[in-house]
Image (cartoon, rainbow, N blue to C red; front, side):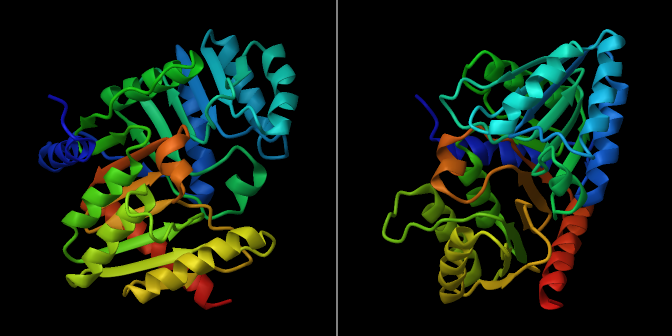
Length: 331
């Protein structure tokens, strides 16, 4: 008998709340991403795997090539996997290969939107940051640095599966961290929202709503969010307001109106800063990763998300949420 997927994630989530704390994941958001990324690259001893939407060669990422070259010279197996449909990924491959990196584009069968780096099956940085100057130096981005062998091996296994065009491993829990399998981001959010008692705070970059499609994963997530609001949970969202992408603005405007009609407090970030973060805080639980709120992000794409149950980390990310909200209010 196969357990329904929602119950699978709920079971993992309960395990994370009961597990003893063995380590402390660290936030690596905004300008703190690059130091953590460099730490992982410099400390790699045997394997270094990078899965990214793209590698944009610019003033911020070029120095990373030198660090990767040094890793290769130390005897580290360095592999990079990028999304096939991004034109400048193909332009980056020759340079990376020239210095001994195994670099390739994905097969093109599935859109690869995940953003993580794993070293030696132990150190991981995962979240929303792309490898570009804009993302690393200017955007609002949410990431977490984790040092844990069980979680590290999971991401190593996930990368290897993508490298070989295979399916993702099943999600697992280690301590306070739960990995979220592809197409389970919606179930992770639903579990968080159903368990929330005091507050839910969301940073949403991209969202597409599907009114009337009751079985659509986005609408199921929204049902859980609105139910939380109706039972008295403080629910807030900050969405991206772009100064150049009108299509994105049309989708977020529609979503904001829909959220407000169901009692969710919605505001927008500052148009001067791209809020590319994907963040959910529900009481003492946090979800960060790469998934946007759409059918593709919840069901179709290769994504990388994690849920962490930790009071201190939840407090940090809620304060981060308030910072982004204040940026929007000050525009």
